[in-house]
Image (cartoon, rainbow, N blue to C red; front, side, top):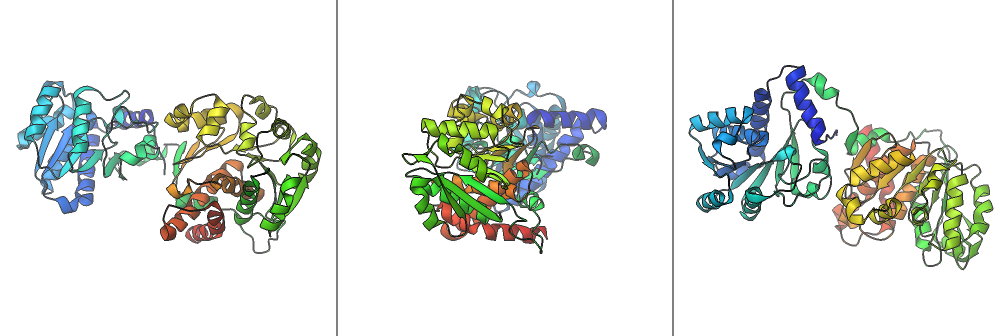
Length: 519
């Protein structure tokens, strides 16, 4: 599903009006009529209401005036609360306000806090509130009587619908701009907005339904895939072929270098992730001190002990790892390695000199803190980084709060700057390509917030690269499969107590279901 930014949507509107000659008032009429039908369907048990449409002074408010008229035509009892003076409403919004006033629907004007308080004291008992205050056009924090109106909507106890975007949600970053309307359903126009799919904004919109507002098809088809929400359809198209005559060599050999004393499980889970994702062969190399544990835990994968220093890898392991890399398709590096100085030095040397595609996670990322030049000096043809927000903060020198406030922008910039694929994990994991494309993952659930999940993901992504997938596509598919496996488990077990090993074991079922969809 294509996603657009606020600016991209403004340009689409302008091109439809100026380039194709579609009058703005027609687009507004189509938007309002479509949204009214959407809300009538979603909230049908509440009809005939009463319903109150709360409008701002801009085009989102104009959409609201159209919605009010069409809701009445559909059998609702409708009133309108306008958060502006009548004279302050202009353009197409003014045209639709005047139509509404002539239709006999009650419109109460509340352009300031005092008149808003008076209006809300009188306007009570509504079963449905429609938010048409700001929508896509908000760029600053909500203040004054607008914030007061949003708080009143949220505290009303009524069902809430949002027009285009819940007012107060940043259309590009998903941030909450001071306060935001909490809706059960959002009717968004032409394309969903990026901020609707990023947390925390995604939690404020409820079910998002896209409304056709009558833009020419040729214009819609020109919208790029720069931002996509990845669902089953997109993921299924990425699945690698599984030839009938294939053998274990056909599907690639993955080398995992991971683990340290007390963190052997990370190496095990990464290796299992690679095997369950379909890699033909997996070799797990680890410090010699924990090798026996991997020998017992891993049945299908091969294992290799490496020179260590008190249970952690040291520079003495470098030559042996480079020899092991011969004939392999990809190196997954980092889970559970630890941050001992010798280990960190080893990781940096491997990142610089290993000629395999690299998937870097956990302590491999920590080793790059303050030393991003290793990425620029690499010999590897491709690198995939899989940081959580804390690791991304260390890589960039920003705070976790700064990372979380602009997940898409941070991931995109780092990917562009260093020519890598960035998998910024979390709710709605972001996959950023070096060329500026980003993919937001549509699978997964809160049950994945447990230890070891990232280790499995590292193995899954690397296992797909081993099978010959392009790194960015492997990252997108791996993230989706990982989340889908967890979703399949959650339908049976719920979202508390899921373990990473269970998710790894569920991966073949997730792949099978996706392949059936594709076929």
